[in-house]
Length: 339
Image 1 (cartoon, rainbow, N blue to C red):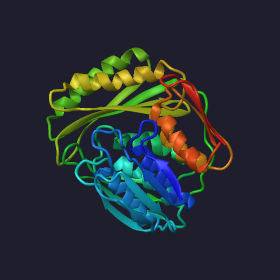
Image 2 (cartoon, rainbow, N blue to C red):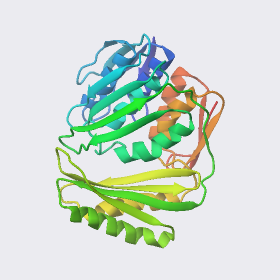
Image 3 (cartoon, rainbow, N blue to C red):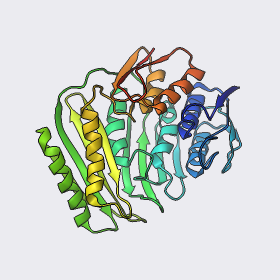
């Protein structure tokens, strides 16, 4: 049984998600110790447990330690089973983080699966639904992954209650190369509100458009009003180049002006465009698992090497030593190669 130190590197939930996904795909039992040991609330929290239980169902796994606060988890997979799955993350636990755990295993199943996940769709510290739909999935599609998602209900912090449904087809992963960013073509976006006046979304959009206008490319931002159990706002900006894309967002909160929401998202866009690299700082580590499971060689450039990426590389290396190299210092542009 492979033992993984859950406190290594940045010591967050990504260690658990990557470990379980690789355990299920490779059929290798694991013991994860010191889970999130350095965090303010160490051990498994509700959204981590949702991912554990979801993948345990998919992989027909034997599990020990799947309780709130547990700092040790044993996971012994049997086989990946397709099916009709419904999971509740609880409150505003991030649906996107559950997807990180279960997506690749289900894509490698023998038959299609249908999923429905209830939880947070636009919540802090996790990719919002537009990012998954418009950035991650199109790139995974280039790698051969066949899947579709639909947002049925929005879920903001703290009540969550958002619903995402999807279909995941049996897929054959292909290598990926994202080496050079092509010229900026356009920026499209979404300014959305739920439970608050539409004029807030309008202010987010107008501030963003004024900030982005000097880039000299077409910019359009749609307005949207959604239904959610908790009020919330989001501005999402999709940077589209000739052969690549990146996404950046900011969420509203009490006491935070619409203009500040727009500024936060725009600042991320400018930071991305000022640096070399195709993958944004949060995309590189999300692509690591499918890259290492695809045959042949894959590579990508990223605008910023993060501790998250290096920690995820370390986890992959525990299963498949010598497969992943990351060139570049933390905080600087880098190159990820997978063999």
